[in-house]
Image (tube, rainbow, N blue to C red; front, side, top):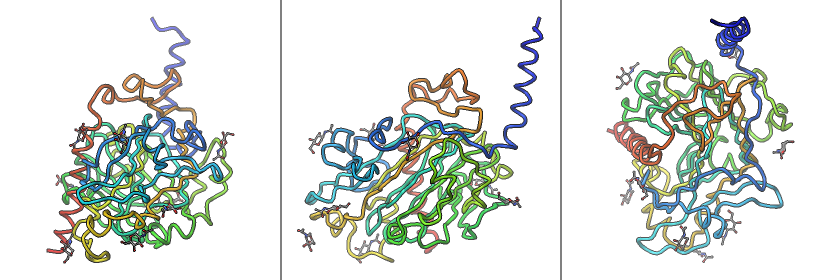
Length: 379
Ligand SMILES: *[C@@H]1O[C@H](CO)[C@@H](O)[C@H](O)[C@H]1NC(C)=O
Ligand SMILES: *[C@@H]1O[C@H](CO)[C@@H](O)[C@H](O)[C@H]1NC(C)=O
Ligand SMILES: *[C@@H]1O[C@H](CO)[C@@H](O)[C@H](O)[C@H]1NC(C)=O
Ligand SMILES: *[C@@H]1O[C@H](CO)[C@@H](O)[C@H](O)[C@H]1NC(C)=O
Ligand SMILES: *[C@@H]1O[C@H](CO)[C@@H](O)[C@H](O)[C@H]1NC(C)=O
Ligand SMILES: *[C@@H]1O[C@H](CO)[C@@H](O)[C@H](O)[C@H]1NC(C)=O
Ligand SMILES: *[C@@H]1O[C@H](CO)[C@@H](O)[C@H](O)[C@H]1NC(C)=O
Ligand SMILES: *[C@@H]1O[C@H](CO)[C@@H](O)[C@H](O)[C@H]1NC(C)=O
């Protein structure tokens, strides 16, 4: 027989569950990657790029530190993640670079902020700040920041199982390239929104000192805001422990739950920074429209001075959870919830599965998709 106490608790839990999604604009910080501890709690890929066929070796944590490819600049406290621009690469060798994925993953109800002062750009360069679940495409993918070569506009996208589409997007961008988020549609280009600002990627982004990207993964929808350095709202720049998305205005990209059941299509996300060179997208059908020569021979090979701009400079990454919840799924406890106070129904999918194997295959599909769709458009 239920006690009055537990009945009351159950009733309160029901109220909390039914109300939370509607008022989910206030978030509390649950994780910060900053300063001397920035590189704690990431996994370095430590293998050549067998994901997107780029001409890089993603180094181990030890070599990233030894070769100064991932380090904290002690004068600024900013994290640097870069392509090797000091070694001479001879024919058939790859150039060193970095790919890191957060050890923790973050469930629906999370919001993450990346304060980026500089991002890689230039011919052959293909960086991304994005996230992906352990299982792909089942757990979804959110691409917050991505571009290639001499691009000037950031391309944002979701990749999911079939059934998630972009409808009624309440966003500032009018550049919607595709609305079917299914990996099986349009050669898996995802549901793409391009940032109209030519300062959202590339040389313009870097010269303006970059800016802050906010990615909100709410049950009501996924949204991305980009604030150039000169207009980062004080609610972000004040380094507060809470933030409220209602002060951010309309996002640049938005995928409401009316077209995509976020709880169904998105599992806890690992946050990822990577920089590859050439590969399926950068050395794809659009290479010759902005860059010259052969991507590998004329850019990757040689003394590396082509890559003086191929680095991320990151002020911080901070992750927030909907007020009163904890959406962190820690690497050691994934599958069973992260703490007694968690309100997240964490999935049982992450523990013990060959994470990389699944998403490597997935990423190849993604990239082949971009390549194929570009070819398709040309045809
Ligand atoms: C570090 O780099 C050296 C030289 O390139 C290489 O021999 C070694 O295997 C690398 N170590 C790891 C752990 O990747
Ligand atoms: C999205 O693409 C998938 C795979 O091709 C297809 O089954 C589905 O019907 C498409 N959705 C819409 C809304 O067109
Ligand atoms: C933000 O504040 C926290 C807590 O006071 C502090 O540990 C952290 O270093 C600050 N982060 C930044 C980016 O200043
Ligand atoms: C779009 O988003 C803004 C900012 O959150 C909100 O004020 C407005 O009501 C939304 N518009 C629609 C049509 O939902
Ligand atoms: C670009 O043009 C060069 C020279 O014509 C050619 O060898 C190369 O295959 C082209 N690259 C792509 C990706 O089409
Ligand atoms: C690097 O190689 C480029 C192209 O071959 C050359 O123009 C440049 O002078 C070289 N720089 C250094 C520092 O050796
Ligand atoms: C490599 O790039 C960094 C900026 O990322 C620059 O400060 C440095 O001078 C470059 N190294 C060489 C040898 O050009
Ligand atoms: C990439 O290489 C790693 C390490 O050898 C391997 O575990 C993984 O299966 C490979 N992935 C793909 C897609 O080939």
